[in-house]
Image 1 (cartoon, each protein chain N blue to C red):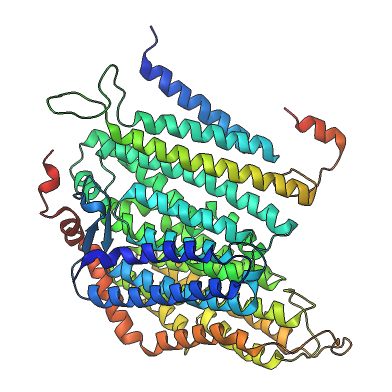
Image 2 (spheres, rainbow over the protein chains, first blue to last red; image 1 turned 180 degrees about the vertical axis):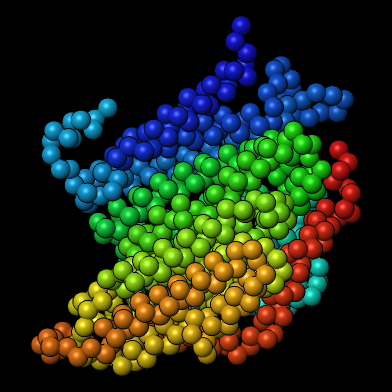
Length: 122
Length: 503
């Protein structure tokens, strides 16, 4: 039986690995996707920092002995809002840059040859 | 006296920034006026706060009156007050400069973004909560994205994309660090975390250190330390020079965050890598100044190098070194700001050659620019009689007893020489070399000498910093003593020292 800890940890790991790989790509679109995946990984991670608990009330009430930590949930909410806004910004910025410079390379250099271009595609 | 005043440096830019949005299309002058009034107001408030905290214990203001470990607190101590004054001075100079040179009319919402940038910077200096620090970092970054791209152009956009991506990754690392620290200590309040980190079981130390290291990495990214410095030269060289002048305070936000968290929570163990990284960055920054063929690049690399000098002093991590570091921090922020503003004037007044370091035929205002450049270079490179000399002298004196003292001395002295050579070469090429090119094009109009007012004001401040070095170092000395006496900070935030240990 796979434990929840294993599931969450591997999900964070896979998302982070994918995010880093994509963020290191040369074109803006994969980089944007990579940043989005990274932020998902971070959100999961933040969610887990209050310790994983199953079947417990989400916030404190009088008389309860066990409850999940509500603070990480608030943090995740803030992180989601910020990362959503930032993703929107980087998408617009990447588009604008593509329209102004005619290339979607992150380093701003134009594509050198079509052959290399196709190699670069996933 | 009400402690509500502590929140004023955060509230005023919000109100002013929102108000400037009302004057977008017509009556832009009113928007600029509001922006400058707000900066002047911030300066007044910061001066009040500085006077109030001078020699006094730190003071906490609980937002919404929620008690400390649960709610968010703003904490005013000598360091925070000093940084607020510095931000307000630089902000006022830059906002006047942008209004005079017309940079604020080159795109939308300039003043609103500028005010929100001030909001983020002031908030980062005042907050006593780590997650709140993250939020204020985001606020200042989001505003800086807008300001960095202000005026647009293909080159600026490409650099802007890189800048945003780097900082998004940085924010992710920041969140991981916060997550680790919260997971280990169960709190995000800095004072509470300081108490809990001291009594942590050995098994959790590793996680705490990992969190501390990641946090230092993020602050190092903001302060542009060696392995993660790559974003700075290009960003600052591609943005409008006046904006780069304002961004000079952003690297100092990173330095401030390192000082705050290291003295309060982690101790000097967290910054073991800081000194070598800072020394390497200094060499790189000043070498970049030597290699630069363009004024903007030169100023950007100069900022990199001088911020690294500051970080080297911080990394020594004792009271004398911190006294020197804080004095140098005041100097380097203003000097870098004035250098960037001057570059903007050179670019504007020359009109044809832009920022390239090439000889120019005589033009109106060349002599005035030359004189200002000379004084700025003296200040920036750290020659007497201006404040850079005193700052570097204090750092060298403080480094005497450090284990790496020979290295620090060698690097500081050699890089200073490199800075002097770079600035002297640029200055003589720009203002001295006799030109063989055809005479003044008719298109070159007489410059508006009023544009130089902020530069002259900042240069006067540098002179004042040198003239009043005694009282100012006395203040930074008291600030450094307060930083290393962390119990006072903890008491100010948590009330009695042992209250936080209760569940």
